[in-house]
Amino acid sequence: MKSIEITANSYAEALKEALEQLGLSENEVDAEKIKETGLIRKKVTVRVTQKVTGAVLVSDFLNGIIQRMNIDCKADVEEKDDAYYVSLSGEDTGVLIGYRGDVLDSLQYLSLLVVNKDNPLGKRLVIDGENYRAKRTATLSKLAKKIAFRVAKNRKEEALEPMNPFERRIIHSALHDDRFVTTESHGEEPNRYVVISPKKPSFDKERRPQNRKPNNQNRPSNNSQNAAASTSHTDTRAFNRTGYGRMKTYGGEKKKLF
View 1 (cartoon, rainbow, N blue to C red):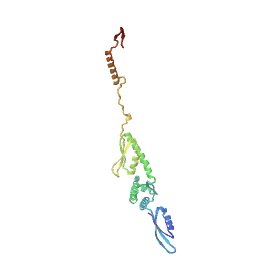
View 2: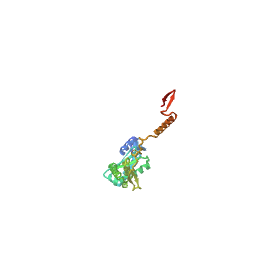
View 3: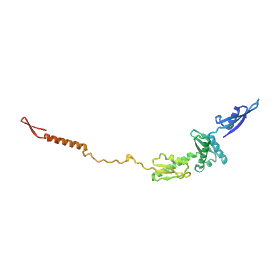
View 4: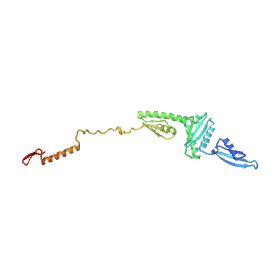
């Protein structure tokens, strides 16, 4: 956090000179008039202090560590709505990245603790150097898809080597929508790892064999049989009552009843 005291002929002149020396704008600082001296030619002393924000805390913390490590590197912090983004630059940036980003992740974790302690806004913090995050994401995504293909082909799960939370999230994200495999984290930190397993085949209703019904097309249905039986019974009663082909006399003439 930057702070400076400037004495000038007026408050405005002192503030302007302080802002130029700090390289900040007026809305980024708190200004306070400390004293005013002189009767004829007045002198005003103003203390200008940079406002405490999350970005300032992160910048002071990281650049302080870099300075104590005596390495050629610088941390530039940009605050956005969703997170603080830190970019490391310099000849010794690789030292702050470390093996597979382990130093970078440690710095990110410690910086986040500092921000949340003094300026708890709930924002994320992302530290990157030499575009390492994007390169590592592309490498792990490619590896995840390669192993997923092998797992789906052999129908046998595979466990990856232990990874930090950032790398595990890359694996899970790369295979989130995969139709043939699923991912799950196992173990305890710092040896937590990802297991890629084949998905269990789901029963496809469309491929479910239909139960074949007996071919009853040539057989009379129950309704047809009932109708035939009813008709036969009706004909029998009619035959018993009048008879078919009987002869009956009406006025001396014989007529055949049908």
